[in-house]
Image 1 (tube, rainbow, N blue to C red):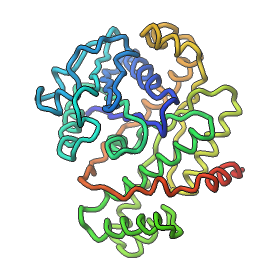
Image 2 (cartoon, rainbow, N blue to C red; image 1 turned 90 degrees about the horizontal axis):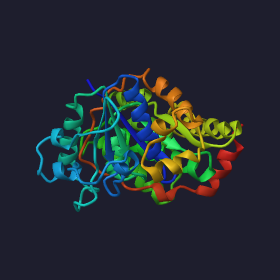
Image 3 (cartoon, rainbow, N blue to C red; image 1 turned 90 degrees about the vertical axis):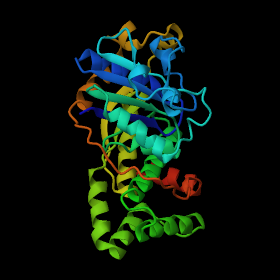
Amino acid sequence: MVNILPIASGKGGVGKSAIAVNLAILLAQKGKKVVLIDFDLGGANLHTLLGLKNNHSGIGNFIYKQESSFEPLLQQTSVQNLQFIAGDCLFPGTANMGFFIKRKLVKEIEALDADYAVLDLGGGTTYNTLDFYLLTYNSLLVTSPELTSVLNAYSFLKAAAYRFLNRQFKAKSPEREAIENYIKNSAAGAESSFVALVDAICGQFPQTGERARAELAKYRPQVILNMGKTTQDLEMARRLRSLVWNKLNITLDFVGFTPRDNGIELAVATRVPLALSNPQSPFVTQLNAAAERIMLHTYSYNDNLEDTELPDNSENQDIEELTSEFSSIN
């Protein structure tokens, strides 16, 4: 069974796509059969980092039924064991797909003849990004040591946690209604927290609530801190882990600390990934160590994809208060 490894970021500019491309190469070099998929459907450009031309069928061809499976979309790369599926920003609507299309995409990913399917997701917290990010319990999040990036990473994980919890209950169930009302009250200014919401659901619906809590306990996102400059940047990772545990009761697994490397810019310009052009670079060395840690996991499929939407409470976060709390963590 293919291990699905979705990779996301709270914001752009943290090197998510560079991590995805080079990680896929390193896994392939370790003898794993890898399919790298560009799931940034609103701005797909992963082919550029791989040095491939944008003249091959992509995800849009499958979504709009020009292809009936992923098989015709697979491109061979210059790396043994590594295949690539392009994203598609040429077809309107690929960035805002419906439930049944997402279901079809998931089934095709599951059917891939590969050890790993590495999904390079779009930035932000759209429902598409969150749903594909939550396909496994150990998805990967990339952030950088800058405070705004770390806080955006927290906001992404918070949105994912609410989405994860909501998906544990059936559509139009009283549990979902309670969650939606809680979020609406939060948006209106009522005091709220994710931990308090979980406790309230468990108190009101003991059987289904405790089952959802047990599922949440399995959810352990992996994090790579990218673009580090000094070992002091690791303190930002520790503070993020503390914040996520205190606010969400979710455990983060930090699997890598990759340094800022000017070679990345050259790799983009020359269209040759750094793992191929300079495998001894500090960035590749550290990412290789992360790949070893990632291979220790079995990426269990989280089969709770539902046709549902939640009220958006992302803008209700008091950034100044959160920044102060983050800075005060010892």
